[in-house]
Image (cartoon, rainbow, N blue to C red; front, side):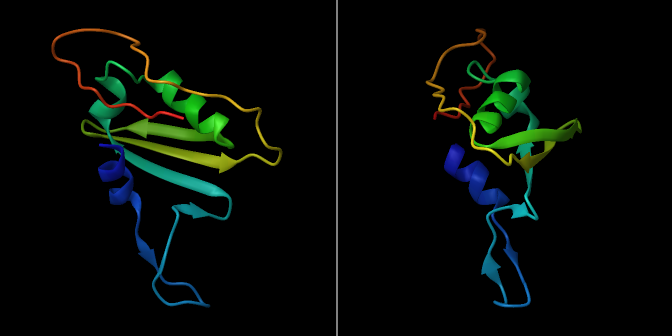
Length: 106
């Protein structure tokens, strides 16, 4: 699921130096992430707070977020100083029969 989700985010953006190079999704220190809403709101292993902590541990600070009925939109900005090392193993945050198994593991 992670590879699929992040592969959907990858896009080819032209720039002045190399036409059509792969983008890492980061533009000017900002990272724009669009995820299916159920990955965050309907997962056993993920919620909004946990999701943002993972990005913060990866060196990004949440600047803005919103959601539509099907998608979650987040804008993160790269931190100037490296964050302390943190790990995020797969751990259940909530349980229920209709929840999905989306997770991000660091």
